[in-house]
Length: 419
Image 1 (cartoon, helix red, strand yellow):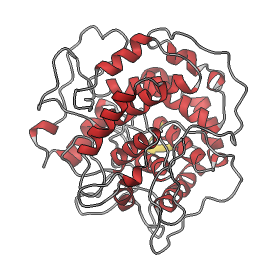
Image 2: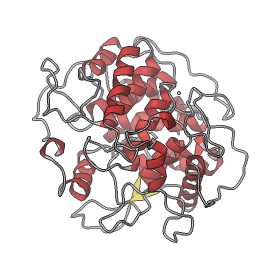
Image 3: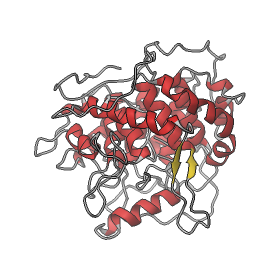
Image 4: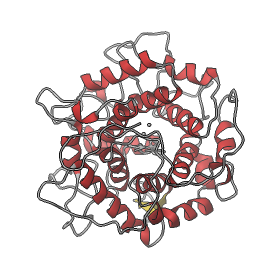
């Protein structure tokens, strides 16, 4: 849900999943040339791949800590929306209308919908965004990053979060063949008996149709399976074990809880998730993945297993400063959302004021509030719950995965091979 949408991650995902079958309209965009960044945008790096994503996460993170963003920042985001309701990853010239060559992005659209819904007074933009997302739903009930490609767990998850955040019922968003987003989501879940990643979710099946455990996809899918968006307040942890259970037909919620069990196990040893080295790296050892670890904290907190994320929060507090500074607004936002979900104070995260650091990456906010008292994990949040009526599935409540990142979800929302 999160960081996660770096140019490298985007390119990697495109190479693995999209190149062979992708039509020209869904090819990865060419990075924009060096130029002055538009006023109102958070961050200083090239926004080609993640402009809307990082702006949306920044606004969501500000909202959860009672910071009122600059009107200029909100206006920048609303101006990115196409007339049909969709968002591209970034449009350098919004004076030109979107056309058939505009590469619309389900992840950016879903994140923007969640941000605009949280800010209020943007009902038309939210409705148009949801209508566009519905119009590009795949027959299996899920979504791909760019329309026209096979569904993936991250994109499906962040779109579920958008419908939930808008107080819609994701389980009632059906494709022409009658499939819901949750029908697609559970197809990415690995059975508990899988020795390498029981309970986890895959990004997509590999070329042989095999599902490979993916931490980024799992964190995003846990939120989606619980009917949550990128903004959550986790229920109070009760210390119960996180156990993978495979009934004859797992509900979306059970699949999500299996994913939480996988994350708890993956974090138990070191407190962090890992990612494979980038192609061409001289050191073949896996690298700590800060963004996916933050997303795992978010997911475990949403599942009521915040206690299983304590070690990870401590690790992030100690080690994430350099990563967040380099990652910019999306990284700061991911940490704020994780801290909020876990019940920690983002203004004192290992001694760092994440809120101030985020605010300094963009236009000064209209107002901030005094740091609140630490929130108990049992406090009610604004999350929405939605889904099918089968089993113990939850209906819509109130607040998103973020991901998919990627990165909520991403900003590596397109990481796809993490074991």
